Amino acid sequence: MEDLAQLELSDNLIEQFGRQILVPGIDEQGQLNLSKRKVAIIGLGALGTVASQYLIRSGVGEVHFIDPDKVEESNLHRQINYTLEDVGAFKAAISKNKLQRINDITKIVSHQTNYQDYLKENENENFDLIFDCTDNHANKILSSQHSKKNKVAYVSISINSTEGIYFSQNYQKEATFCFACLFPQTDINHRCLNSAMIGPVAGFVTSLACTKIIFALASDSNNLKNEISLIDLLTSDINKLQLDKINCPH
Image 1 (cartoon, rainbow, N blue to C red):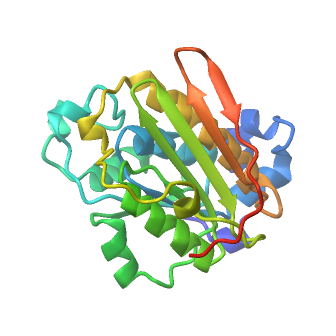
Image 2: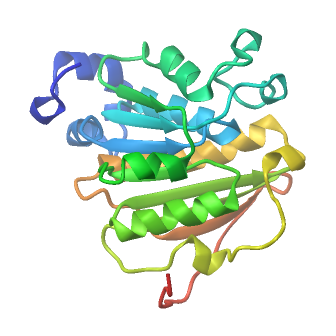
Image 3: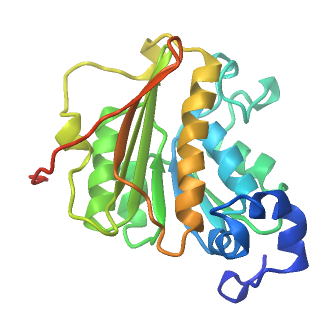
């Protein structure tokens, strides 16, 4: 693994990511910026596996996988990192083993633990962006508030049946609202194991999120926009909400 602090736009970078470098908004400096970024993906399920594929393949410098779960056979129709041979193994470890051979730029670190326990042992870990791909409402509140406290760019995505939600906040730059402001805690369990699910919905919603993330990480200032979008794959509608300025009580 090359020293990311000293990394220049080498022939290796151009060879591996040349087609991406040609995209307006990425270019050579953007690819170099990507190679220096550090991202956490929380959850390696339907959303997190797609996210892991695209962010590793984009040339992000360091990616941490955080997930305590093991692969189950019921996961396979939508969680693209796994096969029948992986059933019973830790998702974070399997994802790392399969993806670390994609390029020689990205460093992958796996954590077989939940996010709350991860923070207890890694509270001072510095990331450029935290990407919450879990299906757990309490976890999203925790990750959002931790990101805001530490001024880290934050993205959360969720899906249910044929619908999805994209939520992003640039906590690096603005004192704005957190996940709990918009989605207060309820007594309803919305975990995907209790929900209808079709695989391509996870792919679409995560692809949209990864596109925004890659452009943000490629910019000199990690310029992630504050957004919330509601996505309906059956009607092909994407509705972006305009949010009033509020004082976050959290």
